Amino acid sequence: METKSAVTALAALAQETRLSIFRLLVEVGPEGTPAVAIGEKLEVPAATLSFHLKELSRAGLVTSRQESRFIYYMADFAHMAALMTFLTHNCCKGMPQECLTVMETALGGCCAPSQPKRKLARSKS
Image (cartoon, rainbow, N blue to C red; front, top):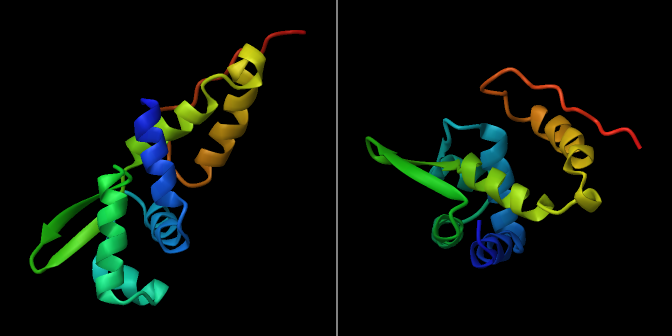
């Protein structure tokens, strides 16, 4: 991820309603949820919701699909992971395995791994 993309994503999340929408979509998971359900759950009017979803989509944080007359929105987990990787790229003074354990634990609480977890080799200091 390039710096400009990271700044765009972070700017999109730096607004209370958009952050709430994104967190809800992360909680819902990869299947997503209809826009109307997002609006009802967060008590956001349709026009306002549309504006915020457009901003999150422009930042690459959400995607959508149409089913029948409903538009479903879902978090773009690959983009979220790329942003998290960008933010932690140089963490822990060149020893990223120190940070990875914390991040894997945090992500393990919300995202089922697609493959078995690997054990990280820890350097002995």
